[in-house]
Image 1 (cartoon, rainbow, N blue to C red):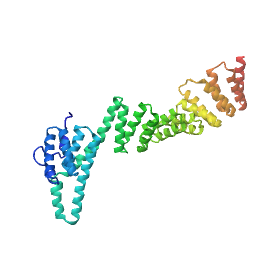
Image 2 (image 1 turned 90 degrees about the vertical axis):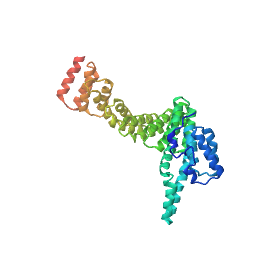
Image 3 (image 1 turned 135 degrees about the horizontal axis):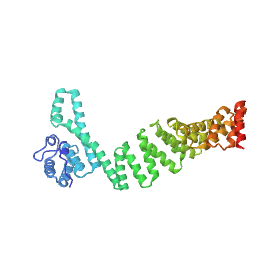
Length: 382
């Protein structure tokens, strides 16, 4: 048997002996009072199985009986651990208490003296204000308890049972974000990716700041091969992490897989904005620009790649240098070509192509001094 939490008794549970003030203030028959006293005795002895049906008899006679509602709620909450049922009774109790306050306000409008008397006998004397605060707290705790039960099921890999609990919570509190997120994770563990994705979408719709949910939706769409939706969701995640390049990068990859170079190009540009020395992004942008027939931009990004590679004085990707030289030559940017063709020659001093390109660039610039230098260099290589 679960140990009864005496703190819950303080919500307003009756004393074991004698008739409660609350009960005395509400109409029940002599038999109802007898049932209430017997229920109180059983509850005081932790015999909730015997107390519960007696309280239910009281509530059949008077559905608004505060003591009976309160004690039944406490039994379901602490002894039976049936939190949905406990919450149902806590809500009923809250409604009854609020109706007492509503009656007080109505009386107050026409008769101040009667209202004061009503307040003293039915609110202050019965400590309804403190009771209402406690009951509200326990009502909310019911959801927390249910969530924790679901989490325990996840820990023991009882995912179907966890989903059942979270489904119950969703019916009670349809805007509880954590419920849908945990359901999504359970479905993912069960390899039900469609339901997993749909519940992550629900999570993101309820909480637009949930980056994790948005990224999971994007990832699941990507795995399905729905690359446009994947890219769109990665950009949704980026709205909450503006300076995180990973979301833009992943969006770029998704759009690239969808053969949408225009969307991919924009996403990778945003990624580079927040990760300006990422060689992979720079080279990818150069390649996409070429696909978009923007040779100027392609060359610009390749030049950035080479400069980034050379920042520490060593070149790890010489192929970028040679490719850049040919691009610069085609664009007739001969001053820049000389710089990078020299770099090419330093990387491979046996390359006649590099020297020939240096000579041709100096010739185009009509720089006789450089022409003589590179002409001699070329002859020495023969």
